[in-house]
Amino acid sequence: MNTLPTINLRVTPETANKDELLKSALSKELKIHKDEIHKFKIIKRSIDARHRNIIFQLKIAYELKGSSIIWPKIEEKPYQKVDDNSSKTIVVGSGPAGLFAALKLLSLGIKPIVIERGKDVRSRRIDLAKINKEHIVNPESNYCFGEGGAGTYSDGKLYTRSGRKKHINSILETFVQHGADEDILIDAHPHIGTNKLPKIIANMRDTLISFGGEIHFNTKLTDFIIENQKIKGVTVNSENQIFADHVILATGHSARDIYYLLHKRNIKIESKTFALGVRVEHPQQLIDQIQYKTENRPEYLPPAAYSLVEQVDGKGVYSFCMCPGGIIAPCATTPGEVVTNGWSPSKRNNPFANSGIVVTIDDENLKDFEKFGPLKGLKFQEYIEKICWEKAGRTQKAPAQALSDFIRQRKSDYLPKCSYQPGVTSVEMDDIFPKAIVNRLRQGFIAFSKKMKGFDHPEAIILATESRTSSPVRIPRDTESLEHPEIKGLFPCGEGAGFAGGIISAAIDGEKCAEKVMQNVKQTKF
Ligand SMILES: Cc1cc2nc3c(=O)[nH]c(=O)nc-3n(C[C@H](O)[C@H](O)[C@H](O)COP(=O)(O)OP(=O)(O)OC[C@H]3O[C@@H](n4cnc5c(N)ncnc54)[C@H](O)[C@@H]3O)c2cc1C
Image (cartoon, rainbow, N blue to C red):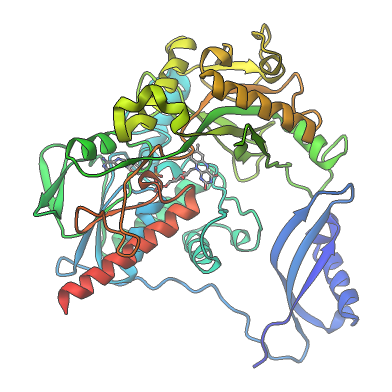
């Protein structure tokens, strides 16, 4: 049996989107008649928009007539049926880290008991509507808490700079197995979209339950059960206890009560650098014009994206989580704070483009918060989010400024239209952030506007604050066993533990922790 031949092609957007044209381009490149091609399929796709003539770069697998080739299929992950006699592991949190840990445990024959403080995906929707329309934040059910974690109503961009290809592909295939479009396996920058994610997450829950796993909503970890430096289980909702020798702690970076609990119980946590800044929004048409260098977005091209980075005073200012055709979302997890983030539907067809523009916060920015020890970054993050809430009128309205006014250091009399549903209030960012941070943001925006002419257009607006891009706390773990160095059987996992940033890396970390649990289980048995 022959191996599948592949070829790289650079073609126009129209050719990339029309099978007949693509077949002709392929036959030309292969120097054969197109009738000799039996079958072909794009297996990698990216867009090169650096020049006026935009090109699709494709990797194509093909089969010629008469050759006998077996096309690889996506392997369905084999899960094992588990029951009460199986080894059990408690997974705290059903975000990407927790869910993928639970699925991996199932594939290894271990029964996952997932506890989740929030509600199922469908019930969560009601609470999201309340934040957007009534400014009511439910501390247990919001954009960050509930089934699927911050990943469910996220943008669903599925790329990461970290992680091995093999691991990334395994996560993408699991998404496809649960209903994601196969395109995510070929695109250089795969994207699912907020409208499609909830169904996929619900399908993952069905897998978990149908193979004997458990998932408990409205069930919050309120304490750890520890004996002789070994985890024995967890207390939930301050009353019930669940026992197991292994606990994967995947509570995300917004679960501040977990950091407080660990600190109170003298379980080691560490302060770490994190990122904070604003969310910027432009009309999508403007970003298309800048990136595609034409008045109107050419046919067959997606709404344009960008990625920006600049060094100011030796420190980075960079764009993060860019959402073409997106919406800015209110992502507070407690009443009395304002937090922004962004999402987009699968078609990316909203009229705005947004991204987080953030700077790194390190010890130098946290001098006034030293007394809080390992919680100093968290306290600073809380402090800024609270200022935003106060300044914008003690609602979920966000403090906002026209980008051009921010650059010129003046208050905005006019605020450009924006997608943030709870509304915006004109506030100077200089009244929110400490000088060192606001200056770096300003210098960053000036540099970005030189790189992307028109980025500081009068219709560009910035909203505060983008504060939950990364965790201000690390829950340490042994590099080999992945257990907390002081508590055997406790596996700090995902973004909340400081070992991931984004859906894919959190999911990979979840799988890794599950594998380490399996090694532990084997060692105890034999
Ligand atoms: C609007 C938005 C858009 C985003 N867009 C993208 C994107 O396009 N691409 C990308 O890669 N990332 C994106 N992210 C970030 C991404 O969602 C996170 O990086 C990822 O979800 C982190 O996964 P996690 O499992 O570590 O934590 P989380 O997803 O935060 O999950 C933690 C879970 O733990 C639960 N929990 C917390 N405390 C407790 C407790 N005490 N007891 C029980 N359960 C608890 C929470 O309810 C939550 O469900 C976005 C985030 C948001 C909010």
